[in-house]
Length: 425
Image (cartoon, rainbow, N blue to C red):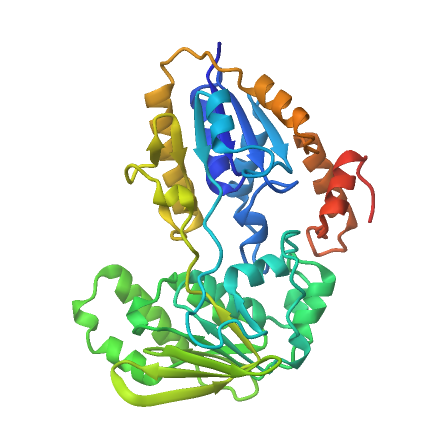
């Protein structure tokens, strides 16, 4: 019997594992189980929608799902319709690629005040993730935004919020959400780093993109820039490139008519103040005891990382093994770090290891047939690849140019569309 493999999670890491195994071991049978009715995970719901996904990555995802040896099972969740013990009985190998956990809170008084969002949850709301049941933030009163974080996610959030209405009209997001973002009466966006400028985990090319924004301008703290320039000779190539990118932003003459995106560093949150909604954030400088900074803000977004998963905590080694025949890939393995390209490259290594360790063993497991019986017994309303293709076609048909699609936001609508021929919304 051919090797049977289950991949839990149809995001970038899971599909990278699928694509590599399907290519290297075409005789294997691969089942992708996904808790949502749609695939792509982080690539669909976790990135800022103002820039299109790389076409090579999109092609990889499509190739993975369309491989002859692959079956997609959407709307079935780990811990709901099945657990890992079920899959391990059914399959020769199982790969957990469920992503990282929830947003890590700021951990200061007031971090649960309305108007305080984790960056992941905020982007998922923007992108129409059906699992986000919380009401949208009250953006019509937001004049000042604070984004806490020095990574790529913080930069993505700040860039998205700084977009002009005309720019948002081209983005891959729902027109109502775009209108809500465009109507924000913004006066300033603060991007707050807890450490120095050189600790920023962003790409120089992404910083350079800020100069192309139609209505906003990046403003870099001159003191933080001077401190970084003072040690420029001791920096490696990557840090020098980062410093050069920040310096290029700072060199642009300030235009007071443009919305400022203020990059500030060496600031640690002390507390968030407000009643019905957040109103102010207080920060301290660890290198200057007693010198606090208070900033007004009606929206605070914490881009300070995601919680670790159970799979991460159970890892046997740093190459993805949890137990014999059980592996982790993507953020479930490495935590919420790394670019999309790094996630995919790492997932391919997990696939190679799986094939080396499991591929030579003759299969005795029921695999796909056993999964089908299990899900039928448990009354699962599964979405197949054909169902996802109907959703995809409906979203594309409903979009007014130049938008690529109009996403379906409700579970019920996704399931109904998956079960019916593609139609205009």
